[in-house]
Image (cartoon, rainbow, N blue to C red):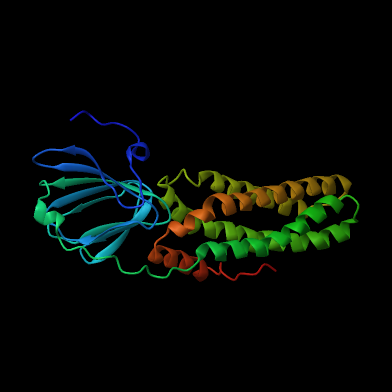
Length: 284
């Protein structure tokens, strides 16, 4: 056989039914590129051959013996002969590399195959995070209004309204960002298989938001003459714009990835969010 080289997604052959592509075959082993559309599966079976699996692209579920493992790009599994195995795509296309040894015989192809059990119901974490964003967004209007009116208002009025804005920023927005750093972003990073890089730009947003809140709070502790009120208005306007853009990036780039989570992964994320008061949290 000739050498084979290329991107997995280009070499893969997708179809209405599972159609593996054999990349290499000898008397000792067989190398197969497995391509599955969303929710397509290889039924559960237990042939008498050893199997090494490398997940190249996508997310899915891998059956190992008597348990299911959530898999993402970069995962590897080795399944000994006689152990039940099967694979199912979840949330999108799934591409895997299978190395089978020894070469499967007729009995292995005839091994009893049974369908996967129904999927476990999973909480809609994406919707709960979306609802929280919708709860927080109206409070950004207070930032915009104070930004636009700060130079026209007297110092006493500015201070009174600024106290309410800072209460929201310090006690709601910053904890919201800190919780996402601990829970949401590590989960999304696993999906992207880019830990430390996939969500790094969002973490930079959080740092910038935190630094600007500190500067606004520092300004609020000093005199608020016309010059300070002008600077305060500009800072509030910039912060409001950054937060709105940050929410939009989460809504359009990250939350759509959450349906790729397995039911246990979704439940674990929801539990982590709820334990910190995230779900159902209302800003003052």
